[in-house]
Image 1 (cartoon, rainbow, N blue to C red):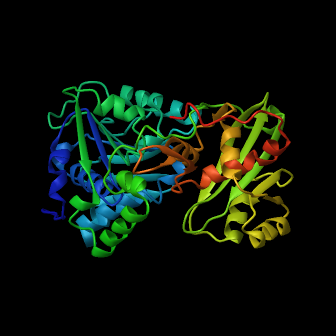
Image 2: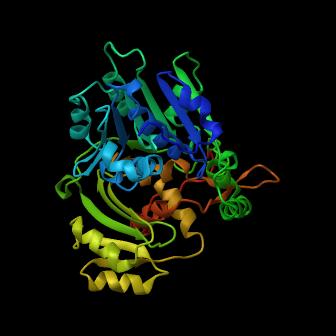
Length: 419
């Protein structure tokens, strides 16, 4: 195959040409950044000029690669090579791996969910060439220490003058407090290239998607700033700041009390949390976070993960039929009582706790980092009402402590001092 053809969005031309060590690409949903990066890598990995290059693709959870980065890269191969795919590429699904038959360049996929996975990153080797490129997709899921380990892997003399070391970050800029902003956007260096894209700069976006984004702009202006315009999420108005993200034992024996909570969903996420209390502090241990799954499918997922049926499961009282299905499946599902001011009371109680979050709970972390109070557009003051956007795990968090709130004699905190 002497020539390959593929359509690119010209907005990414400078991003595809930069050889700087850090390529930080923030953007809105639908901006095309992941599609562009996948195509860019496939063209380079299949080009003899880049012989000796290899790509490591990283997400927080290794299990999420198959339907995201692996699908993106194989999709790029199919678009570019068409009927000649098998002639030029070897693609395996167990384990996930992509190798170009001409150059010998390869792509491997890893996670950084725990210490064992992070340790494995230190011993990555390739039969041909070196690890030259790393792509961190959904990069805001990663901890700064995760990237430090990856960064240290890119070292040593490269004998092919066309090769260069580079880490690429692609992400939606959910929070302006995120370490990625501080490290790669607020700090100037000749080694850093940053890039901004939105669905408005994507020439391949269809009219229906444009209308969807306009609807989001009207209904959820705060969410539109992040997911429509690719702007950093506001610092002000954050509801909870009393949490730490770190590894800890998640076994039942470690806690004084353990329980489950669930917020039902279909188009928006169905979120299940497994959490424990120890010495008066709350530990978020595990999550199930899925979209477009009916209740029977979610019960199967819970069973496959050996979710403890003997633990009390606190659920949204608005879904009695779903609660009944969980009870029939053997779970101790029970409804959380609602009343005037109950959401505010739950939040005020949560503010009094120290919340520990296991790093494997990536969707919970995303939500708590961007969970904010509504803002009065006229006065600029924050209201006592959370923004109803990407808050499914936060609803489950509120359900976790509802019975403790009702039994508690603690004095409820006032909104004073809220950011």
